[in-house]
Length: 170
Image (tube, rainbow, N blue to C red; front, side, top):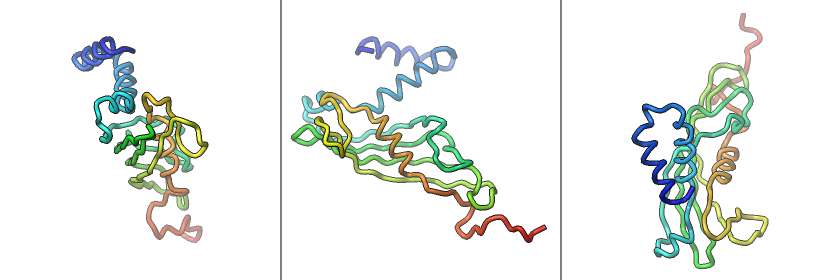
């Protein structure tokens, strides 16, 4: 959506989000798409070469790799960016969320708060090592999805010294 139309939807959805149920999903999509985008060309023109974004992200159902677990609620994200003279953009991306499910050893309830920071580089030409963008704007969705996946532990334990299911306990 373009400028005026997008602003109309933001204002409309903000004013009526409690009364309308059909438009609410569109409001959520608009908000997450807008917040997760860095307009590099526009920021360069304004000579604003660094900044920070804070936003919440709703992960997909298959975002959790740990068996019998899931991500509880939304993922809190923070991105500090710096635009370099060659139009590459360095981003320090932090993801925070609650991993909840069953212990990988004893199957009791377990949860763990995850907080992980990643240093990411977006470049305009594909070098097969960094994220690529078009030189105009960066959508952080793929980077956030990757950060969620790479931040997860291999197993989730109910406590650090969990020894597993006690087969002798009757």
